Amino acid sequence: MNENKPKHRSLGRKLLGILEDMAAIWADEMKMTVKDEGVLIFFILVPILYPLLYSWIYNNEVVREVPVAVVDNSHSSLSREFLRRCDASPDMKVAYYCNNLEEAKELVGRQVVHGVLYFPQDFDKKINHGEQVNVSVYCDMSLMLTYKAIYQTSQGVSLMMGKEIQIEKAGGFTERDNEITTKPLDFDEVQIFNPTGGYGSAILPGVLIIIIQQTLLLGIGLSAGTSRERNRYQNLVPISRHYNGVFRIVGGKGLCYFMIYSVLSAYLTLVVPKLFGFTSLVHANDLLGLMLPFILACIFFGMAVSCLIRYRENVMLIVVFTSLIFLFMTGISWPQNNIPGFWQGVSWLFPSTFGVKGFLTISSMGGTLADIETEYKALWAQVIVYFLATCVVYQIQINRAEKYSKQ
Image (cartoon, rainbow, N blue to C red; front, side, top):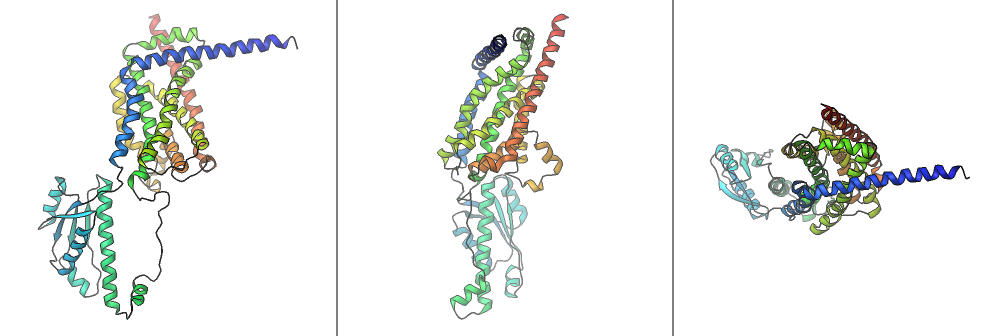
């Protein structure tokens, strides 16, 4: 018993020394973060203000009176009735009549209209002969809300007029006969997890997770670029010698970033959805269980790739270029089945891929950690891999700095 006491004491002192070293490194990194205005902007202002702006833009979920151009080569009563009903809808406005598609394309190119309706010359003739005819709808895909308004309105009017023509041709005797003719199988359409059917409720919760990753990459990369420009990495040599290794340096720096983003993540995942009425069925335990490995994975991923950042300006170009790519790779704005297998494998390298899927499951669908077991394990695997990668990267930087100081 007495022989074991010195061992326990030495182990306790060693553990206490590790914690003291990490706390000292955390304090130094926190001071550098507060003093660097660029890092402070990306760590504080951007995560707070950017989600508010982005959510406010899509807060209405729908757009009204979207202007369209019409090319009516039929000049018939049926085509005019089709246009009258489209114009009477709350989502679409018939703004221009053009002689051909070239004129309509020019209006779309100048953003005067956001879509085109094209009626062929035989539109009325084919319907009267009992043949099928197509109304071509061209939409500007630069804004999904306008595309949705034009497409759904045109589709609704087409289905409504198709039912009326079907009733007229069938010659039923009662309204019940007409109902059975046009809709023999009745159904109720219920939109689960997105009752408004809006773009914001479907996409923006995932975008909030992307913002956490990208702003972390921006802040860490900006700090790394500043250090390289000022040769501050030479200071890692005495720091490494004083604190006996690179693990304490990585742990202290990571603790600084984690403390900042634990607060910001709570704001992004809890406050912002409530402010704008997004579907939020999340439970505290499930959210905490997901965000803990996600934030750590983002921190160590950012620290590992910071070795590629030579100048401060580079990080902004890299992050802006990759933000849309990361969003597409998550599968929320583009069907995952249509993403090639190679790129799906590449997407597994990024924490956002698993973080977005996990957050949408527990927040928008009311799932639990058991429902996102795959994403949960993948994030913890990334934490371990990127932590070790960060230690290797920092050790390489220390070795290079030592060689440079000896020259």
